[in-house]
Length: 287
Image (tube, rainbow, N blue to C red; front, side, top):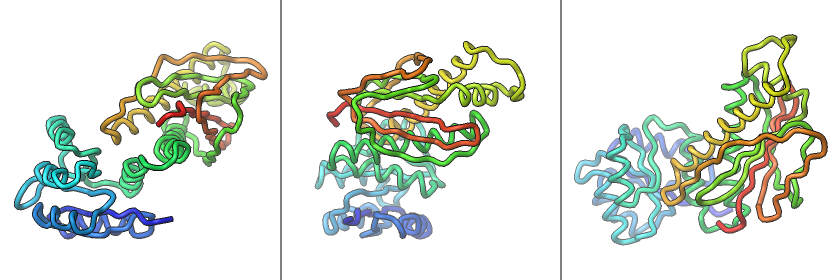
């Protein structure tokens, strides 16, 4: 796979070295480093990177002005601001200048790579975009949320759903996604897993009594929280797409069939000590 070229703009040599180190063993290759705006513009024109990481504080012009100068020579330039500051006014000014995403120092390796991957996947096929830019984020949020909501670890697997329907045995919390892109998320599991997770979520002991309505409500709320977290994370990265979620609904029973003929969907499986937790993430076929 061809390397994705990254230019790092930061007045701090240490910060430039940190970003370079984070990307050293990835598909991203640092093709240029600049310590001021003038050098950044000259190197951008020379190296033509796929994406730029931009600091706010530069000695000759701030990161927003540097972004304007780069966009003057390439209106399609992809720029991520990595700064110690990340306030609403800065983000608004940066959006207007053409900055696509904002990260706050210190940035983690996963956060940086996820953001660069989302920004650089716009020109590949829809399946690849949805998997790498969206579904991977949903899977990571699911794994993190299983820890924060239920207190359990998991192993995650992702596979494209080749069927035009989704088959569920047990309970499914279904959440719609509106905006751009449109889609649907279903968090589902068997009844035994539902009760175990619901009791863990509510801080109950395994032997405590829990009604079916209460267990279903707990899974519905968990689906709402997980989907909301994932959508918010994606919205933080994309400057031109704004997704929102609809109120969740729950279905329960045996051999439930959810139709999704118009969606490109993926099955995410989280293997836990309480049982398998499934999440189907689907989006409209146009990116």
